[in-house]
Length: 353
Image 1: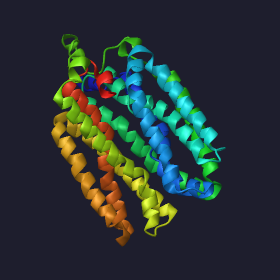
Image 2 (image 1 turned 135 degrees about the vertical axis):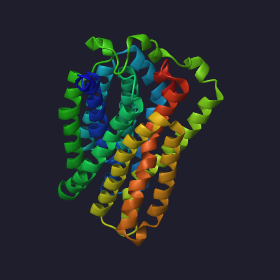
Image 3 (image 1 turned 180 degrees about the horizontal axis):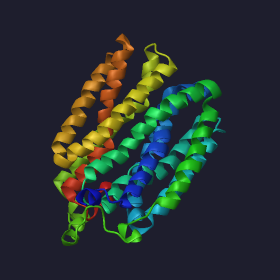
């Protein structure tokens, strides 16, 4: 009987599935596969890879500019419909990208995608997991975040094949259709905002611990504390390092490897991201410091291997896999450190500052 009860279904698992859908399909296609488009699109448009890649700067910049507003909106409005609508917007933008003829078109698209990703990438699973789970939060955040790595492993070679066979425009078209017909409808049907919407308590919550979920530091106090700015600097450096992932496929081809080989390295990175996120989530359930040291240490080692990658694909592949652990830390470590240090009381406001 005890075993049966431990495996009792909870709607929180559906929320985990939805978060994995967001990260695996939407983020997997939009962010994990962004690098494979740099060479073909820039060549076709007659611009440098740096000029084309600047559209990702618009993605990140608009995401961060939108974050403070997005956090308040996630508290005030329905997360279910905010995330569903953002998914639809990203899918439609990808359809529009098939018709772009100038690099500035991508800059505008990057700005729109960035606004949507403020909700989808940075707030969706940390906020929802914190609402729906009271135990094993690190593991489930790591699991949901790892879905982007799984998406990258699957979609990078798939996207590389599509680009080689049908061209980058048709690849954007196929990616947009996948987002619109798979992710968007399922999010609208399955997502719920709070456990109370389904008449249940959060996973792992007991009657006597009902108040524990709302403990922590007030937003106004948190943003004035020194540790807040330490975490802010840590998050900045982690994100800065993660942007290297966008240029790694181009780096692989620049030292003499083929586009398909660069896609294979990108898949190795995403495999490292996938394993790293789940592992880091579990490690953080025990020790946040151990999680930080693991992520940064393996990331540095992976970067060294990548620099030696021109000696052979084995170096590139191993380096990509290890670097994936640093990339994994961007979402897992920052989300869990905020919860560990400041609690869950004003989590969405603090995490999106």
